[in-house]
Amino acid sequence: GNVDWLWVVPLCPLIAGELMAVVSAVNGSSRAAYDARPDAGSGFGGYIGFAVLGVLWPVLRLLLVVLLIIRLDGTADLPWGVVFLPCWIGFAVLLAPIFDSVRRVRAEKNSEDNQGAEGEDKPKLSYTNIISFLVVWGAGATVCILLCARLTLGSDTSPPIPMAAILGPVWIFAGLLLCTLSCFLLCVRPEEMPEPDPEAGAGGYHGGDGDGDRDGSG
Image 1 (cartoon, rainbow, N blue to C red):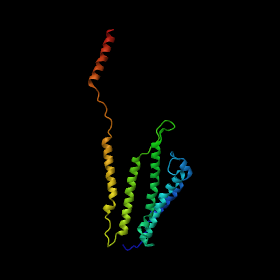
Image 2: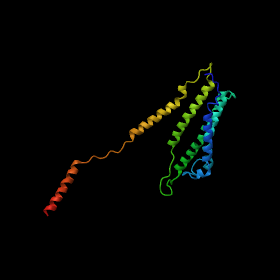
Image 3: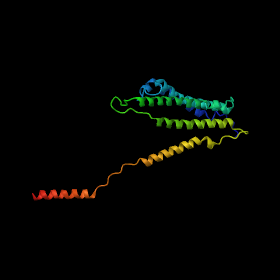
Image 4: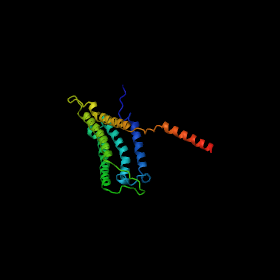
């Protein structure tokens, strides 16, 4: 209880891990790694989009940790909205693939030939996938916005936002996911094997005996 450490000291392992993740992401975003992907050339933004998205997330996580340390240690009195800046950038970047997916869905709807070069169906997107992604995106963004509002407005004069309200989108999403999984498990059942017909089996058996009798009598 008497140790007065700065926040940067206990968070040093986290910073080191994020730095290693940034280095690993840079090494994994090479042109050779992109060309080796089976879906090379079909993703959002081509190689540039692949490289940016691959490196962006570790950099944003590292930046978030650094801003939190600066705020908690009192090095600079940053507003909580600035501390959460990596989250806002991440949510904004995630919208770009959504718009690209909508464009691809419209192109597939207008195209008359959805067959591949070998006659197989091309992998298609649907508005259901886009809406599902938007639900997850909205839940995460709402939690971050409410948490930032709680930290910014929570003081003696204004009561803080309850954590139950902040995590409300998570509970709603978890309930929807549980309902979807339950419906899937109830609707998808294994095919029942047909029961053997005892009369058909008996007839075949007697038929075999009859053939044997005729062969013996002949």
